[in-house]
Image (cartoon, rainbow, N blue to C red):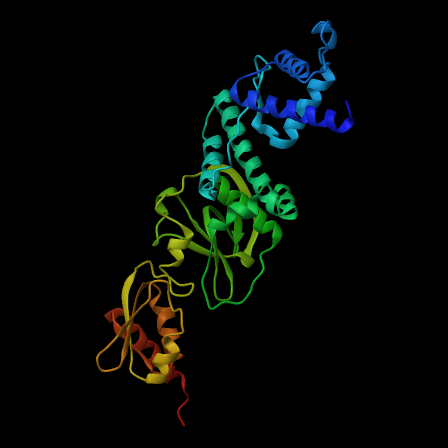
Length: 355
């Protein structure tokens, strides 16, 4: 038999073995007998010779298994008791997200003393993340390698970041970023020194603001709402450590939702229905190009003016922002915003020296 024909027959037998392994569990000897039968059918065993005389060797079986492992990785499963093999083919689920991977981490921490359950859950997480790595590596080997090196933190942590502006580009210290990423994902409390005071908080996310990057955190599980969370400037955090004390994240809270309640980096703890009025045509033209807030709506009026509506907190920040427009944008709702704006303008007038 020529080498080309021999290689073809080897490939054909391995493909048939793949079909068989998808259908049932096979021991090493089952595979050996199956490949021997394939050899007989392919004409390698001549009439008059016994099956035993021409049975494939153990090395041939191992080569066939290695061939399948190279193709399918850990989808070729082996029973820990019988040692039998089976090929479980399924695609990596497209909708796996950071929260689901994080949930496995949380479950592993809270599993208690059930070592068997802890092992099974750990194996499940390993399978999911391994398939994620391979999926990414299929499109970019460099990116896949980088994700493996960082335990896929950069891929998972993106759901914990939100950006508000206008802002300067700021960099986070790599050690600080690593500790925070780990603690946020694992839902571990952190300790640090902040302006001379020791803090022990539950980290919820990272917020990129106007001139700084902030840690968003709360003191307890009961404080995960828009009113009680606190901001800490990352550059002012010292002696940061991740503890092993876990906490539960409120499923109704997300850093993105929190950012959408704010104007800039500020939040009063109260969300208002905001309305601005613009009459100047040039200002209207400019304002239509602005993203003031994720909830903004434009309401053209019959007299040619424009009302901008939004739901946000941070009246001090809104007042300061409106002052930059030189009176061309006027706050008309709520009363608290109008009062805050007037107070700001009065203070500005008082600060101007009299001649």
